[in-house]
Length: 306
Ligand SMILES: Nc1nc2c(c(=O)[nH]1)N=C([C@H](O)[C@H](O)COP(=O)(O)OP(=O)(O)OP(=O)(O)O)CN2
Image (tube, rainbow, N blue to C red; front, side, top):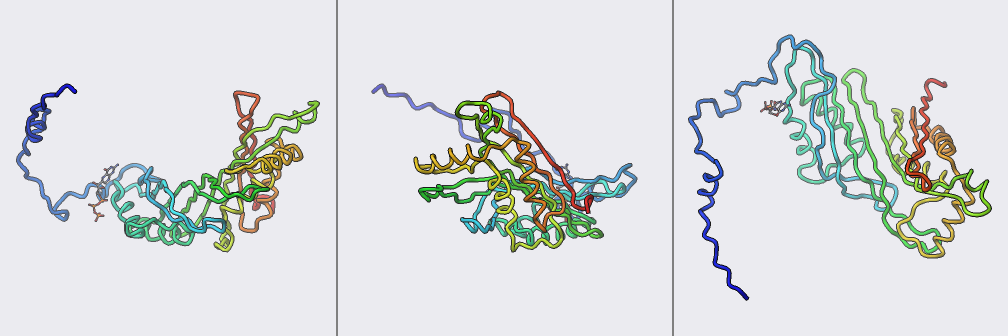
C-alpha cells in the first residue's frame, strides 16, 4: 500500500495565530461582580412595561410521571421561561432562569409534575423580584400500546405541553396540551363507494385550561389521549400482527369519522371532565386522497355557557 508522508503541521498555538488569534489586550475593567456595572438593573423611564422577557428553546432532561406504562420516564423538555418587567426596569436577570433550573434539578432530570412546576414558577418570580413568571415546557411523552388481538406491546408517543402562569396577585393559570395521533375513515367515501373507503392518520390537538380543583389523581395526559383515541375510527399501534391488523381495519370501517365528527365527539368528552374549564380541540387529517389536509376546530369555555 502506498506510504503517505506524514504532513508536518505547526503547533496548535501557531495554527491559532495563523488563523487570526491575537494575544489578550490591556484589561482595565473590574472583574469582581460587585464592582461591575449592572445595566439590567438600571431604573429610568424606558417607555413601556414588557409583558414577557426571558429565555426560550432551553432543552433539559425532564422526568414525567404517568398512569400509563412507563409510569415514570425521562424525556427531553424544551422550556420557555419569562416574566414581565415594569417600564422603569431596563432588563431582566437572564442568568437566573437557568440558575433556577439547575437549583431545582440538581443536574438530574427536572420533575415536571404540575405541583413541581407550580412551586418552581412561584420561586422563579421571587428570584427575579417580579410579580409573575410564565413557564412553558413541551416534551414527547412515551406510552406503551399493545396490539388489540396479540397484546404485543410497543411504544407510542404524543406531543405534550404544560404552561403555568404564576401571578403574585392572581395566583396560577395552568394550561395543558396534547397532540394524539389516530386513524380516521371517511364517512362519505364509505357511503358512496361499493367497497373500501379512504382513511388516514389524523392529529387531534387538545388544549385545556385546568380548573383550580385539578389534582394529579387524574393523569391529564392519559385523559386527553383517551378522549382523542376512544372517539377515533381506530387507534394507532406500534406493533400489529395480522389478527391485530384485521381488527383495526374492520374497526375503522365500522367507525367512520369526518374531522367535524372528531372535534364534536372529543369536545363532548372534554366537556364532561370536571377539571376542564375551557378547551380547544383541533383535528387535522393527513388526507390520503389529497395533497392537502382537512381541519376542524372547536373552542369552548364552560364559564361562558354557565
Ligand atoms: N437579551 C439579553 N439580555 C441580557 C443578557 C444577554 O446576554 N442578552 N445578558 C445579561 C447579563 O449580562 C447576564 O445574563 C447576567 O446578568 P444577570 O442574570 O443579571 O446576572 P448577574 O451577574 O447580574 O447576577 P445576579 O446576582 O443574578 O443579578 C442580562 N441581559
